Image (cartoon, rainbow, N blue to C red):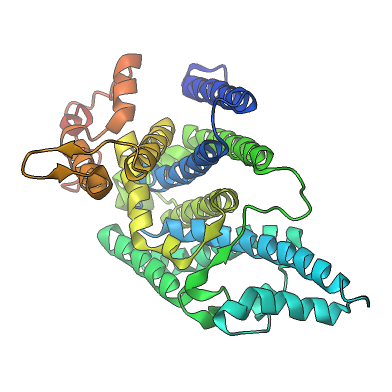
Length: 405
């Protein structure tokens, strides 16, 4: 991919803007102009933008509306959280046993770790799924493997049965709900409703949270750049043309000899892994993860971000996720003053979701291209003139009239 080609101008602009933003936040943090908590908020926002990129590739380009991709996001957090909690607890247990006078045996250390972690749910043994929690490389591999295998199996079963449209969305939502209900159980091996906590404390690191927050902020920005360039290369080539064709007319693409199920399965699995990596960066900054993070509403939020930012535009997904997540933190954090209305008081903490829902409805009705459509208008990007011809035989096929909205 030659970035100097006019087709890739948006990628260059995105990288430049993100680089300036990263440098600006770093300098502001060094001079004490922004707090550590706000740097963490920005770092988490970049992780959400990374998940939105994956959702845009899946929904905006391939036309697959998944209402369960935040499950993969949370699974990535659980996988890295297991190592963080294990290693940090091991340091505490070893230090405590060292005060006993005699060196602790490996069995005593392991028992102490298990009791410390699972005592809250009435257990004293490490479950089998924690077998690799002592190894950072193995847990990093599981960050990719566990969500990837789950997405591969689920996608293979769904796509080979040719489940599409709203039925597929319902299936992904059901998968997420089932996984969340399972993790709420204490015998799931992941501490049930208590989840994993203390993830912000990196084992063996003596630096303060101000430095650690910047490290994760830089890592999140770097991951976003790499993912953006990779996905931009995908959608700009032949693969991108094929998945857009599948989105517009799946039957015709299948008739032309393409393996539609193979393309859809690849995109579904790839986006699941990207979401998992985003979650692995997000939750050490959040400090805690519990099964509530897998609630189906989280995946619906992800779809709303992409819709508001503009489907089928990678930069639109980033803009939508960043804008909505930051506004959510602002409105729900009690920073916005309440508005007296005479007959009552408007508390934004209570009405933020209503405002978000109204925004989504308005975007769907009046600006289906989202915020990204405004950038297209300013850049002079026009829809192809197809003389009103449909891109497919279905009633829902894209028409020229829809393309001009």
